[in-house]
Length: 169
Image 1 (tube, rainbow, N blue to C red):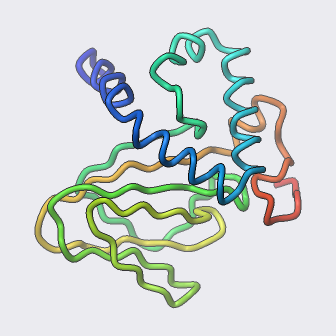
Image 2 (spheres, rainbow, N blue to C red):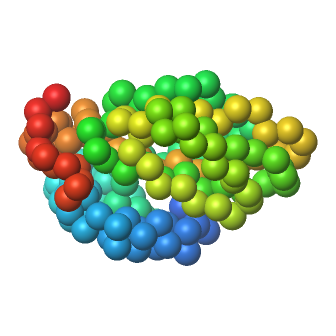
């Protein structure tokens, strides 16, 4: 939206290579098929869009097409309906908060989160929520992909995970 925000995004990516490499290696380990398909998606974006080629030098380890930094936000129970079915999303937490929880109502599960935690889950297929976290600041980085990008690049209907059957949505 502004030159300062634009430059800040590039600075963040440049300074976050260790986090990006870490999240990439976890995804490659837990779901090689989704990692391979996201890598193919990334290659197709670079082939189709000049801005993606220009962006490549600061994006060496980010296979997800989306990376969002969020500050002090809670979220009610929801699905991420724009994500492909069975696709992984990743959230990495930071800040000074001490008492925060990640809720998965379908599973009857409440997971305590602390600064430095990383959570992988299937955001379209699993209801999730993060209620108020009490004192301190909480910010997090979310990595995810949107089904629209897969469709735009001719990959609609492919499995987003080696743990699921392929389906058209």
